[in-house]
Length: 279
Image (cartoon, rainbow, N blue to C red; front, side):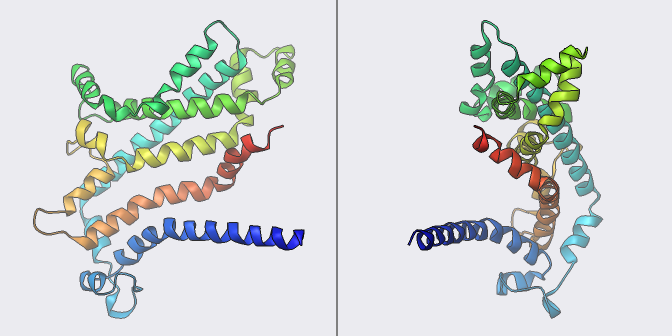
């Protein structure tokens, strides 16, 4: 009876997860499938496969011939890569300091650093715009990077600090006895231990940065600093929409996120479940 109940419960869980996965994956598949079809086929049968006379690469050819889109894609790659690197580095260092060193205002600093989780950064858009104007950072990739680092650090600090609290202090004490200084301990001992968490923070940071339209539209709308999400808008006119190009551009924009997830999927799952298996 117990085994039957257990199997029923497991089956129910798998059905729920499968249904949720289908809901999450279906829009992505729909975009990719329709990006390979003619405009008539998109509206005639949106869920149909691109076979026979419905197959078309017109959208991709239009995107590739558009030199500006390559620039937009490059801008997104630069902003996302640099932002993730800084978020991971600064978040890991802050998390290590908070979890390792006990001082008077340790808890207050931790609360201050993760306050950004509770307060959306978009509420300060006007103040951020004024600051960027004063620093001459409007229409620069540097301005976007600084905003995204500030946006991603609260979550990164929270994840790293909570994970590092569970790391044995004996390992670090042994490193100190071997003559390593604090920087060597961080980069040679701590960083290798947090690889799963690095993957988790990187993936969770990349998705909102890569898909963001709000800050590029406000802080970097210039032709030379547009990102992919903002660049897709060029295919949407006032009266007509080039759906082939829009769907092809969205498919190209999706690929880096899917690639990152596929590369770090095992590390991501391990990092997410790390807190659940402690103790």
